[in-house]
Structures are given as structure tokens and as C-alpha cells.
Amino acid sequence: MQKTIISVKDLKKNYGSFEAVKGISFDVYEGEIFGLLGPNGAGKSTTLEIIETLREKTSGQVMVDGLDLDKAPDSIKKIIGVQLQTSGFYPGLNLVELINLFAGLYNEKVDPMALLKLVNLEDKAKNKFKEMSGGQKQRFSIATTLINKPRVIFLDEPTTGLDPQARRNLWDLVKKIRSEGTTVIITTHYMDEAEQLCDRIAIMDEGKVIALASPDKMIDDLVATGFERPKQVKSANLEDVFIHLTGKEMRDE
Image (cartoon, rainbow, N blue to C red; front, side, top):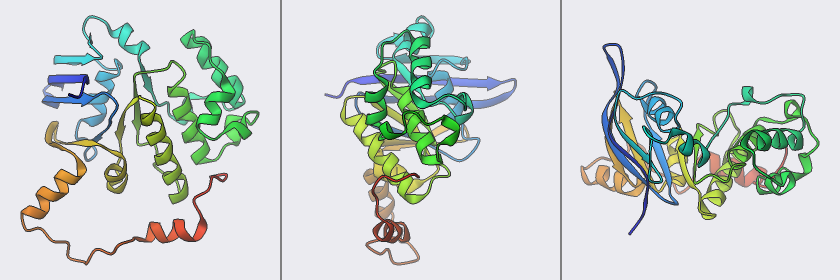
């Protein structure tokens, strides 16, 4: 039986008379990649910020690895990792210096080179953050979520703006992190990304969870209704062509 690591029960968040999150409930299992999807304004970012202890809820219950958000928010902070936006880094520091800085804030002992090797950036150790490409910055951002050896990490649209090679490399990194036992919660607007990465998905709209299942189950349920794509689906797409022609090896993306 799968262990529940995050449990959300009847979660609500109001801003005055506006209901941003309307009594949603879902569980996240230990060791899975869980996607929270939805259009802009659906309430997914608010939901994640509440779980991350960054925003106060109006009502409901949130449990993270057996810890009650209302009673132990500081303990929850110690066991989660939250992806920082690029604006959260000092651009003039190199990667080793940045890791040591964050390790000091977490009061953790970290081997910077081992962490950089995990995200394939060991050869960039002495580079300043501002000198990095978009894909490298995103991989480094994910590395910083792992400094405190978290049980759960939260990735907010980690591949937005990246080219196809950088996206696929980041997918491999997320899968690698999950394979080592860390639970991953991800938001994305790329449906192919959610389909490739996520074990299960919750789709939100207008503050409610309107579907929760594996990508395959959602697709099968849609097909069972008689739905057909207006255009025949080919066994590959243009992104596959791009990757095949240009290669998928690590480069300065």
C-alpha cells in the first residue's frame, strides 16, 4: 500500500469575498511525481504556496509527512524543498559559493561538487550564476531545493522558456531525483511534460479539483467517450524530430 506523504482535506482560501480555492481534497503518495495542472487563475499556485507554508489558508487541513500545517509549520519547512526563481540568486557569486551560502542558511553540511554533479553542472562550478544559460540556471535552481535533503520538492513550471533539449534534460533530472526517493510536485503548462513525467495529475479549474488520476487513465477515459482527434496522431512529433537531428547530449543550454 502506498504511503500518503501529503494530505489536503477541504482546503479553502478566500481573499475577501473571492474564493480562490474552494474546498479541495487530494493526497500525494510518497515517491511519486505528482502534477498540479490548471489554467491561470485556477488556484494551483495558491494551493502549493499554502502547502509550502508561504501563504495562510482560510480553512481545511494540510498534513505533510505526518506533520500538521497548523501545528508544525517550521518542521514542515525543514523537510521540503521549494524551487527558487532566478531572481533569488546573487548573480555575482559562483555556483559553489551559492551552494555554500544556502547550506549555511539551512545549517546543513553539503558537498557542493557532489550536488553539482547530480545536476550535470560540475564543470560550471566556478562560473557565476549570471553567466549561466537558461537550462543551466533551472538545473541549478533544482539543485538548491535538494540542499536540506528534503522529503518533498516543489517545482513551479521548471521548463518554461527552455529549448527542447534543455526540457528533455530537465525531465531526466526530475526522474533521477524521484528514483532516489524524493517526492516531486510539479506545475506545468506543457501537457506533454505532464504526460511524460507525472504518475498522477490533479487538474484544477476555478478553485476546484475537477479530475485526479494517472495521465493514462485520463486519456483512456476521454477516448471511451468517443473522442477523436481531428488530425491523425503520428508516432512522433516535431519535437522528437528536433531532438533526433540535434542530439540530446548535455550542452550549454
